[in-house]
Image (cartoon, rainbow, N blue to C red; front, side):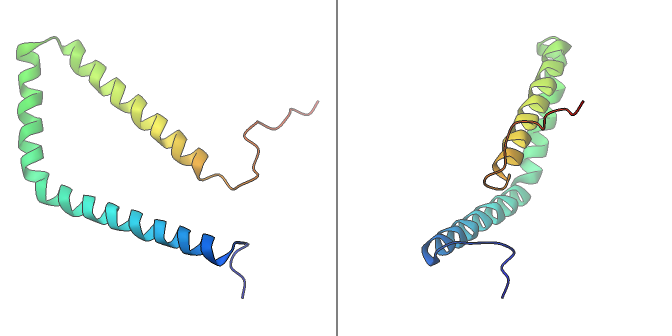
Length: 97
C-alpha cells in the first residue's frame, strides 16, 4: 500500500494523527463558537466602527485596516513556509545565463 511517500515510525504517525485530531477539534470549536457569537460581535463591531469618526481621525481607521492586512499576510507566509515539504530549500533557484 502506497502512503503517498510518507515514511515514519508508528510513534510519529500516532503523534501526527493525534495532533491533527486536536487541531480539527479546536478549529471546529472555534467555528461553532464564532457562529454562536456572530450576532453579538457584528453589533459590537458596527458600533465601534460608527464611533470612530466621532471620536478620532479617519486616519486611525485606515491604519487599522492596513495593519490587519499586513498581519494576515505574515500569517499566510508562515503557514506556507511551515507547509513546505522537509528537505526543500528556502533559497531561490539561481538564475541561468
